[in-house]
Image: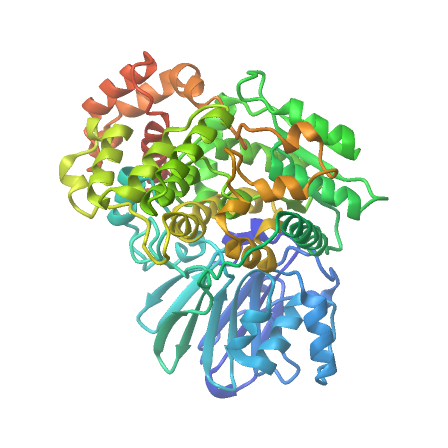
Amino acid sequence: MTQSLAHRGPDGEGYVLLTHHRVGKPISTIGRLSDSVRTTPQGYAIGFGHRRLAILDRSPLGHQPMGCEQGEIWITYNGEIYNYIEIREELQRLGWCFRSMTDTEVILCAYQQWGIECLSRFNGMFAFAIWDGLRNRLVCARDRLGIKPFYFREIADGIMFGSEIKALLQDPSLVRSPNRRAAHAFLVLGLQDHSEETFFSGIRQLRPGHVLVLDEDRLQVHRWWDLPSPEYSEVADGFAAETLRGLFEDAVRLHLRSDVPVGSCLSGGLDSSSIVCAMRRILSDQQIETFSACFDDPQYDERPYSHAVVSESHVRSVDVFPDARSLFDDLPRMLWFQEEPFSGASYLAQWAVMKAASEHGLKVLLDGQGGDELLCGYPGYWGSYIGDLFCAGSISGGLHALSACYRNQSRFDPMIVSNIARALLPGRLVSECRSWIKGNAHWINPAFISCFPSDTIYEKRYSTALENHVAAFLQTHSLPALLHHEDRNSMAFSIEARLPFLDTRLVDCLWRWPAKLKLRDGVSKRVMREAMKGLIPEKVRTRRDKMGFATPQDRWLREMLRPELESLFSSSSFARREYWDPCQLQKAYKRYCAGELEIGTSIWRCITLELWHQQFSI
């Protein structure tokens, strides 16, 4: 299991075998378990393994699994606690002594001091398991928004867990079978990573903001963090911009805590450009490397913007040109790391960027995930906002916002109309319209569609459509899948991706601020644009189009990869799947290639789902 995760930690491995109730002496090993334990150990009930990516305190003192001084409590952990220095100082004032400079030891001591309540003090990304020999329990936790992964499977005499599913697949007793519900949500609804289910039947993920406790053979999972109820108060524009700038720069500062060099992804959009320019202000005397996906097609190329940032911030830029054919050849390998199909070719561009960063020796990259969700950067948010105005009886206000949105967007996105309808119409009608617009009815088997509910309405937890929209994108419909793919693409090349926009303080602040600070006069991310005045180039700060690792996906699917895809769609393995009618799909694909249908994303889902089946022999 541990060896299968070597890519996540190439700098070392370690193990500990433990008994219940501190009976017997723990076997703690550094290096391969088989080198230290020549025969099968008897009587041990708990086993931890760990692969190390050494970023903080690279000395042997940072080795994992790590135990407390008395050996009663052990941890295996993946992630970073960015405020570990501040927590460490607080614990020292309470009398705790530390042997290392790692955040791992801070978690271990914080748990001993505060128990599970220590989680609320952590500002970072984490997934960890703690064996508490004093209470005879296993405690596993995942960070608020699920930046770091945690998978588990219940077995007859306990549980198995790991950072990736492939660790659990090492169990020879596991019979691999697809999770039909996950495949349905992916193909019909365009959802993934929205629940605890995975594409593998019987393997679950610990949801973001949840903790798992195995105590006396009783397994319980409960939420330890959730978005708070919005409590809006009037915030002046100038104060909001100043506050956001201060919080954002401090978030970037914390995310730069590292004993190895830190680089950044750079798309040329507002979010990544803000990160790079903030890095330059903080690391004024250091060389910074950035990595950008570029294309010869001007429709998808963001070099005019990314180069403006490079010129102004004097960073060292690496431009990466993803190639459709080589990336398609890499798809099986990508799916092995991703462990699930994915919905678009943008992840291929991200893969190429991570590969380039690895070739340049980077271990840590900052990236802008989360900014669009929190700051209402997606065009569809306008639909929910306008729908709220209509629902509140402000017809003139809604029409004014719609008109301003139409004038200021580089292109009017159909998701705006879709989300106005979502705010005003019954959920079932919206779902039926969505299926018709997406074109799924052309080839997905009706019997498969009817197996599970097809309602994609956002859960109504809050008082407005926009609040429910933002909450859904943060916790179910958007960010979880983006974080999954970012983690796997980066870790495939032994790189830790850090996301300053998901700093705990930023999330709390931006979630609580009213919509008018984010959406106004047809301009999205309004408060962020104001906060970045004088920090980033004006042509980037005021740009209206949104791309973000955009690729010429349609040209790739219609032209460059057409022979390979026609062969895939006519293969015997493709014909065996229950999900689709291959003849109807081939007809739809020909119409798509002729420009009669715009179904590239739906086609891509079918491609990656089939190749996922083949990669994992399911």
